[in-house]
Length: 188
Image (cartoon, rainbow, N blue to C red; front, side, top):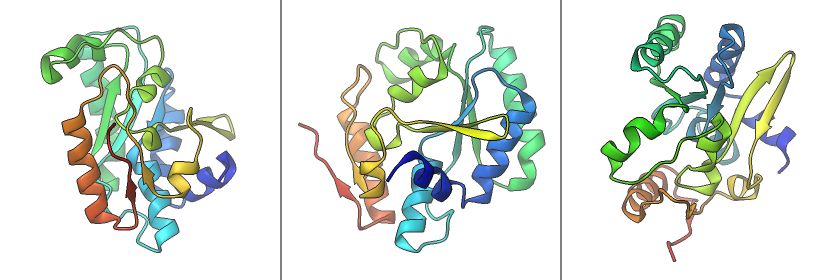
């Protein structure tokens, strides 16, 4: 699978399209729709399921140098107000401020990031290290590990600095229950 095929399949979910389009209209800095909602849509298309099967939420990353909670909360509220009609859970996070709360929540260090794609690089699994955004009339796709694991329904750990074997096991078990075709690569 290449980027064009991935994008075509991920955009079969009209919620993904609506969010990406609205992010472009809002012009949030370095804003991406990321992770599971994209990958799981592709899995659903490939396995003949409803495009929104198993999607718990839709994650939005952006990067704003204003690291105040008030600024992030304003973005969260704006997105909610604009997209409430979609009737889905949207999680928006300013990647410039993750290092402020992550260690307290997860007990792991989290150095400051320089851009949203740095946050994508830190996802728990390699197959979810993807993001989509609109640039003018075109789309930009970020996928540092490519699309083979997505196309082949493989969950593979991302042994980064904030990897948690316990969190990986929970996520992989949830996915395996929803997509029995999934191959889960064990933590080494």
